[in-house]
Length: 154
Image (cartoon, rainbow, N blue to C red; front, side):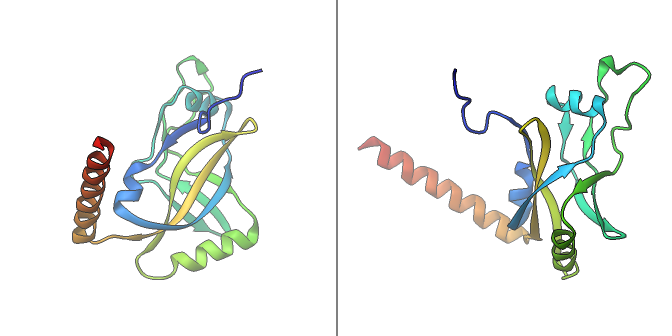
């Protein structure tokens, strides 16, 4: 029996979120989906652009996540841009909602993956970076790459 490589069940990652936000306080949440949405996710047809978590009536919803329609769904097509309910404990929702009330903070999805046959979404609290902070991060990463490249020569 062969073991899967770590991270082999990752559907998609939101790499842009790490560029735009300083992320902290990660949580794993379940997500309420229809059958055609799961099949579309297995095919990798998902887009994180402009998605975030919204809190309404003590519940958490993932807004702006685009899951493309599944071609073979027939008459039971899903709405690609609908709000999807996140499955979290009540105390987790309260803590996240409290952190979002602070100015400049939001909750964004960072990763979609399968865990034990269920679709999970990794969400994190993020504080928006200023443009100069984003540029500094890019410079720092470029310098780190250069130093690693130089060290690899020896």
